[in-house]
Amino acid sequence: MAWAAYDDIVYALIPRILPKPLYIERDCDFGQLSSRPVECGYFYVTERRSENRGMTIRMPVAIFRNEDSVEHPDPVLLIGGGPGIAAFPMRLGTRQFWLGATGDHPWLEGRDLIVYDQRGAGQASPLLDCPGLKEGYTWLDDFRTNKAPNAAAATKRAVAECRDSLLAEGIDLTAYNTPALAADVADLRVALGIETWNLWGASYGSAVAMEVMRRHPEGIRSAILTGVLPPQARFYADRIENFAVLLERLSDRCESRSACSKSALALNQDLGEAGRRLHENPDTDFVKVKRIDELWQVDVDDRMLFHLIFLLLFEDERLANYPDLVEQLKEGSLHEFEDLINFLDFATMGPVMSVGMRMSVECNDWTETDAATVDQLAARYKALGNWIRWDSRPGWCAEWTTTEAPAIDPSPIKSDIPTLLLNGAYDTAMPAAWAERAAETLSRGQLFVFPASGHFLDSNPCAGLLIGEFLNDPVNRPVNPCFAREKPLVFN
Image (cartoon, rainbow, N blue to C red):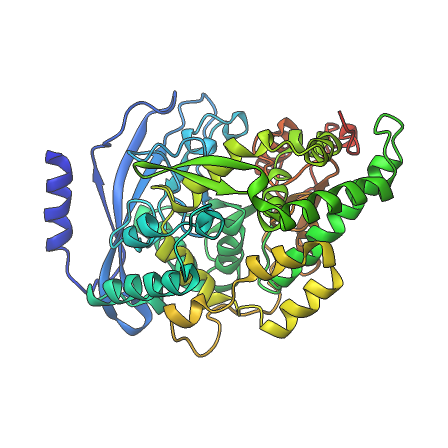
C-alpha cells in the first residue's frame, strides 16, 4: 500500500502536458510469476499527444528479463486483446488470460518480454471502468429468470451515467482508440530506449500491432499476429457470417467422418431443434451464476445457446467434442455451459475487463451494424436470427461517444515488415479469412492457418515452434515440420 501511495504522489507531480514520453522504474507490487527476474515501471504519455492537450495517462509495464546464455537485443512486446482486458497479472489474478505474460515460453530464448496495460485498461490511470454498470447490469441481465422490467432502457441509462462520470473526471473518451494505442506503443519503445523490437499482437492486439506497422514502423524488427483482426474487416457482420459458415463446416466435417455417425443434415436439425426448444421454453432449464454477493438464476434460450457455442469453439478441445455437445443439447442437458457462463461473466464484467475502454474502442473505431443489415443477416441465417439481433445490440454507441467518423483507417495495412500470421481455421472471433486478407498486402507476411484450431493458439506447441523459428530468422518462411503434421479436425 505504501508503494501504491508513493506511485500516486509521483503521478500527481507529473506535468499534465509531457514534452516527450516518460518511463519511471518502480518496485514490482506482485509476487513471483516467472522463473525470470522482472522489472516494473510506469509509462506516461499525454492523452492527446498530437494536439498537446488532455490529461496525463499512466500505464504499468513489466519486463521479464532474459537470463539465457544466448542474448538477443530485440525484445518482444505483448500487445493484449479485448479491447479492455488487463494484460498481465498483478493484483487482478489475470494469469489465466495471458499465460505468455509469465515470460516462460521456450521460443522467447534469449529475449526479454515486455508486457503492459493499455491506456484505459487494467491498472492504467485513468481507468475507463464502469463499476455501477457492472454491479447493476451484466450481459446476463436479459436472461435472468426474474429480470427487472425495462432492462434494455435501464442498461442504456447505466451506459450514459458511466459516460457522464468519466467525462466529469476530465477524460476525453474519443482519445481511446486503436490509433492512440498504436502511438502509445511507438512512444513506449522510445521511452525504454530500445532500438529495435518485435511486436506480438494477440486477438484485438493484432489490430493495434498492424496500426503501429502502418503509422509508426520505426524500430520494428518483426511482427507476430495471432487471431488476426485487420482494419478492413466488418467487425460485426463478418463474424456473424463466419459463425454461420463454420457451423455448416462442422456439420459437413462430421458427415465425412465415420466416427461421427451423424449426417450434416441430422446434426443441423438437432442443433436447430435445440434452439427452437429453448426459444419456446427458455425457463425449462437454467444455470446459476454468482453475481457480486448474490446468486442469479439465468434462463438459457436460443440467444444464449448460440452465444455460448460461439465461445465454446474458441478451444480446440471443445471443437473436437462438437457433435457430443449437440447431442447433449438435443437431450436437454446444459451442464457443459454452467462453468462457461460463470467464467464469461467474470471475463466481461469482472475486474479483468474495463467496460468503458472496450466501449470507447468499439464505438470510436467501428461502425455499428445498422438495423437493415441485422435484419438481412437474421433472415439469411434463420436459426441464428434471435441471437444475431441480440448480439448486434445497436444503440449503445449513441449513448457513449459522438465521433463523426471511425478513428481507424479501414484501408488494408501495406507493409514490408516481416510478419508471421497465425490463425485457427475454426476461429469464431477472428475468422481465418481476415488473416488471409491481411496477408495479401503484407509483402513479407507468412501465413499459417491451423486446420483444427479455434481462437486460442497460445497453447499449441507448433505455434510456439513457428514463432521461435520466425524470431530467429524473420526473413525466411518457417520450415519446422510440425505444421505439416497438423491434422484436419477429428471429432472425439
